[in-house]
Amino acid sequence: MTRKSLFCAPLVALAFASVLSVPSAAQERGPTPASPEQIRAAIDKLADLDYQTRMAAGRTIRRAPAAQTVPALLQAVNEHADGFIRFRSLILLTGYSDPRIEEVMEATLASPNDRLREVGYAYFEQHPSPRLLPRIFTALDKEEGEFVRPALVRAIAAYIATAKSPDGPKMAEALIRDAGRGVDFFRSTVIEALGDYKIASAVAKLTEVSKLDGPLQDDAAIALGKIGEKGSLNTLAALQQSAPKENQPAIAAAICLMGTNCSAHLGYLEKTLTFAETYPGYQDLVRSAASGLGHIAQKGSDEALRILFDVGVPSRDPLRAPITLAVGLVALRNTPLLLKTLQARADQDAAVGLVAEAFDMLEEDLEEERFFVSVRKEYWAAPEGSPVRKLCELLINKLDF
Image (cartoon, rainbow, N blue to C red; front, top):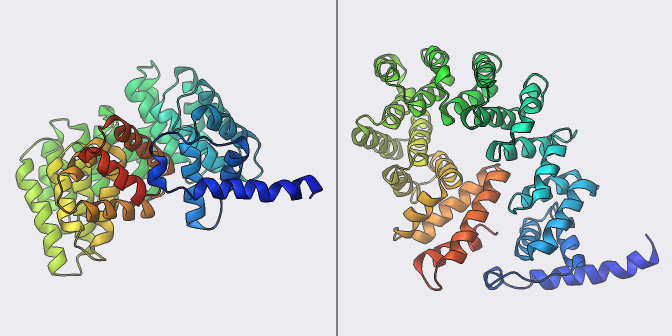
């Protein structure tokens, strides 16, 4: 280490500490000016082993003006020696609108760092770029990263649903092929993507999978419910007669997703959770019911989300964990519904606590960053002292962003 670096290090550390000493709520009054040294110091702390230090570093970066932050994050993604800091910097970049970000994301698709490739594909799921379609589709036969393939699959499914490419049928055929082969974990992520993006040509394969006993039966039933083809109702009705009891909640949720007799199926799912709370030992039913309610809530059902909070807030493990996870996924994938529901709850602090627990469980870094961006936008749009502004401030402080 040079004499200059020895002299500068304490100054940078002091500057970083001075930024972090400001309470997070106070920083929400507006962008907090920060020097280049302070921003670089915060970026260097994104991989710190101490949780509070990492979270404080993220807050410092998010609160600094974009004109200062974006160039520093771009430099970190391209040059930082720590691969995890490059990953976290890339995640933080997704919260900004800057034309340079797409170029950086494109470069990550060729990175040897699995985390960077995962973020790149996940970014292009949300921001499809037609010129990259051939490259992304070609990667399906080459990508071997265990945690990268799900993001790649979802990016391809998004292109099929939104890009209207003449290669759409060929891409759909490739995903449908993957839904029927390989280990269950990978097949599950493909099935979920086919359902989320309503790829109708997958119905025959999903129907076939739904008739097989095993862990994928739930996934296939839910995907059929999301796609919503009328013929699938007969398949689901037959499954109600033949599928194991632990899969019945998912089948009920799938029928509700199709818009059929939803009130009765929501009642059944709620009773399943409360029964399991009273009589422990039915964890498979709990997981299936909580997940089913989560999928229904993601589609926009405030009643399904109410049930998850009503049962989840006072619950304890083992009932609490699957409900918490379901709430977290609703928060990420239907943030407006979450905010609407939380505003109306008398137990708001405890309900937000359940969301915070969910974020501790989840490892959806990019989706969590999108959630943070959405909440901050709501915060700034809301009048001072309004219920929604107070709720957003509570979320910002409870979730440490």
